[in-house]
Length: 210
Image (cartoon, rainbow, N blue to C red):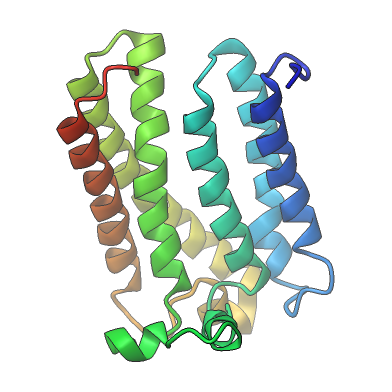
């Protein structure tokens, strides 16, 4: 596939699909007042990634991880996370209920996305640090885990402030708290678990192609 605007073709396609997905997710969204707050920032992230990748090339596997995370986030954003109908989707496919199997008492799409943030961003971050900052694979992986933890904390603070300012009476639904006062702490812990899972996998495989 040919290069597009300075990026390898597959990477340009992944970023293009990510941006398009964010836009299409807003068509007939059940929550038109809140969904744009979730998914319009994705367009900014895609634009920044496009510019960054032109300066700091990365393997397509890293971009695939980021695109996969953004796809999960886009689905969550369309339904403001608290109302992603994954149980109905599973039922339509004839698959068993995840909530019933694991005894979940809440919509857990946000938990999946927080875990995915850690699991799917740790590798791209470690790869960038090793390739473009000359860090050893072990140190790059460690810093990637720390970055995920810090990023999760900053996101929770940002989400709190954005919710207070913009979400009004729908604040609890918008931020996905669903009545759980420990939701931010659990989200950060799950993101950290995702990053640690990837870190262990990277070290066990002793990946040297950072």
